[in-house]
Length: 444
Image (cartoon, rainbow, N blue to C red; front, side):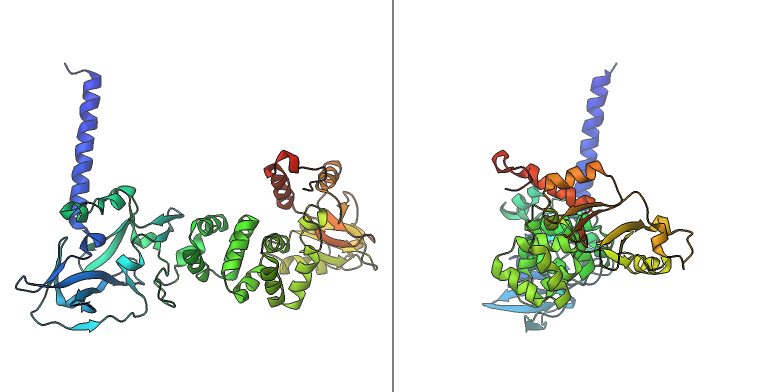
């Protein structure tokens, strides 16, 4: 009688055999792009015509069709139409006719030269939300001609390409991603070539995912991903990156785009990034901003970063205490969707001094014509001066849990607000410093 251990071992061995058989079956349906490079291109009579230089597909389809090949013939790099090719095999290309049309290679819009543009370059896997590197690409004839169907990201495939002969050309799919979920980037050295149409799936990614992708990509690939993002999505991602990383991104793009991103970011996050830039770059970006945005950011830069003024955001909704509920509701509606705002309005007196803060929930059911002054009352907002240290801010919050932490000047006029994430970021920064750098108040 067979023991349970023996049965389990036999089952595992059978599973491994089925897995190997399945991989072999899949391999037989695929053609390795890397395995085709430098292989013979032969005529109908089998005589060599040249050697394959690259495989060209047309972007825009989830599985881009092969539209042609580049071939090296007698020192020239020429174009071969896909219609002139009778067969694509692991070892060679076979031509359709004795005579065929060979043209000089000319890059056209949306064409991707797979080996030179994609293999060994970074790509964005939109399904797994990760940056991957293409070890190989796979073609398959899925009924309407040869198409790019997958990207192999495994390290073993990268090593396989170094093997001699057929072993190095044979597909070895182990970690293969469907090309339909890949966002390819303009990694060509030819300036101005866009390899892929903007992928709508980028809009479905969370800002945190985009931040991770931007942090993992190389410089050129990162810029191409930014080109496919609108300012709001890009700014949301930059706000979630470290100040050093967001500064690196801003420093790499042109001044005009960097200024647009800064103006879209929350002011405190924008200032954190600006502080990490060299002074000349910082000044160039500030001068490229609209006058109002420049003034706001310069004002925030004037505060020590380890004080309340240095960690606050200047984005706040301020309304006169004698205004009506309808006016406060209007301001809140206009700010809806702005990540830099909250659901709180600050009430000020005729001199601009802080009176109270009113939350959106406090306005529910109120008569639109009712003066806001009639809603004033405890709990009162927590206030701190602009030069308050981090310890002072933490103590103020601990002693009076209110709806807002408002930074005020000597006349009690609101300068900005400190949000929970700003306080957490500041505390985290203190924890990341060496013990001898930590001084009471958070200064170092």
